[in-house]
Length: 274
Length: 226
Image (cartoon, rainbow over all chains, first blue to last red; front, side, top):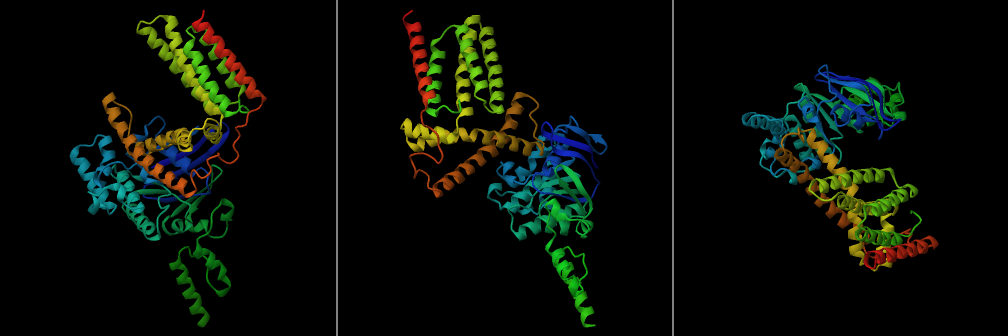
């Protein structure tokens, strides 16, 4: 549904923040974009939303170029969730906050009611519909930001570091929510520095360095050990590092999450005592 | 201008603004404005201040045109536009060539303004670019949810409230955080001024002040005793 074709962007003449990036995201994919600070991840997603206009190249949504399309119009197809939800929250109740987008885009009253109800249901906020949004926890506010985007029924959801500043439980709950949305067909494009999250939830990883895409492939392929991810500013997930350290004890490489590592250790132990 | 003491620049802003108020000839004000632009060029002010100067020029031209359209004489219209451009331009020059901590130190140590008030003034100035960045960020966040500044004036104003509300809420939170952070770092304990401030007078300051005094005397004499 999203095609980024040879897109470049300069904040200052001659200094590329994004340089010749080509990327596609199909319906239902779960893609994570990683890379060190200043590698162009956020700039790329802002280009997709029309918040920035490419210096060169084209961005297509369902085959149609987005050049000249207002961000508000793009929002119907692509939802965007910022790192800091406080920048958008301003209404007196959770339900009213989620209704903002549909109202702006001229939905009928019944459509707004339905859109809000299903968005709050999907994000687990239905019971808090009347709550005052600014008193919510960071994780709940981030859920509300997702609900606000979902109220416009986008087919692709872009999230820029949505789990920053959250505790482990809130992080896991948010990622489970995204996984659920993805299972129901919403494509997810997640900008993250968190390799544990990337390894557990994403199926495809895109790595950017100095404005260019240096890796685009499966998550297992990224951490298979063939590439020095450290050179891209990434750190292998803990499970992969431990498995590498236990290779001499017969633990096979490949685990990306603790559960997989436990399984491999159990196999190695059985073989050792067999 | 960067090597000139902040107090000299503050005096310059006030005295040259006084000149602009006293002068009622468009030619004289145009000459003064040209001198200000030349001073800008010599001061190696940051690029952003040139942008501000350009916007000021457009606004001044608009103000002049509006005065003229409302029936004022051409000379008077030009005087109003140039006066406004001159006074605002001086302020932009002061801000573009003076560090905030130097300005605070000059207000406190040389003009004897109470530290809390001086800090309040300079902190407000410091937050202007932050506030503008915040406006942009909030606008972008709302645009991603369907905000648009198109339509009738009434609709645009109503929509703009959705930018203003989160902005106010965030500004209040930010002020509280900043106040706490300042208290925790010993706000006001050193009333003599901040670290590394540079407010001492040099020969160029005495020369500038003498020239400003002479210019003021001449313009006052011309205005009231001609």
